[in-house]
Amino acid sequence: MTIKLDLKLLVIALVVMILVMFGLWRPWEKTKNRTIEVTGQAELTAEPDEFTFNATYQKTASERKTAIAAVSTLGNDVVAKLKELGVEEKKITTNVSTGVGYYEPGMPISEDTLRKDNSSLTAVFTLTAIVNDKTLAQKVTDYIATTPVQYTVTPQYGFSNKTRKELEAKARTLALTDGKKKALETADTLGVELGKVQKVSEVQWGGGIIPLEGKVGSADAVSSPIILPGEQEVSFSVTITYELR
Image (cartoon, rainbow, N blue to C red; front, side, top):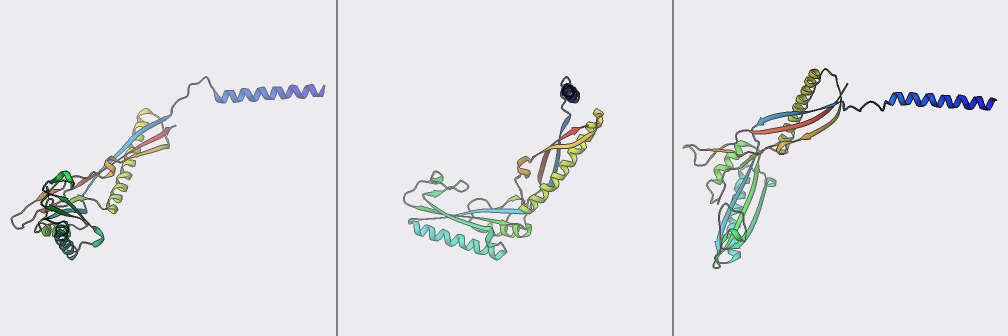
């Protein structure tokens, strides 16, 4: 008799537990996606603080070693002057290449861009110099304009790594603030409460920095172009998913 009573109570307890769990689960109700997704955006503009010069020089001779020696002398003199002006040596890179014929200025250096002339050989000296000061960049521009540079005189404009990180961090904060504002407005319109953030996806347009072509001005008082980098834009976008209560 005692054994039967215990089994009966145990079965009743199990049935009650199953019913309670079934009630809490409520499988007859459809699952609802209680989230909203918003996109926060921000745009900043700033004046570039990095100036990259790419200068090309060439010398042609009947012998390879003569052409290389001549263009190296010219290129080394340019490098020495740049260092004298204040350009750091660690921010200067150089390269010398050769080919039969005559190099077409402004074109990538390759056999296809050399006019074929087996009677001569052209040596090309290219240098890249990076400057992070606008005043010094103008001095470099003034000097390069006096040399027999083959193509570009003015620099390309951009941001230093430090400035880029600072601008992207600021743009990211503004984008997150914009996203939260939009989420609150949406929740208020729908008559619900905003819950915790479930996911944040960041999208940097153009890598965060969109490099633009710099402007070049001129004046009668100088013999070289005036550096006018203008402003460049930093855009940042984030997608935020919030839960709703």
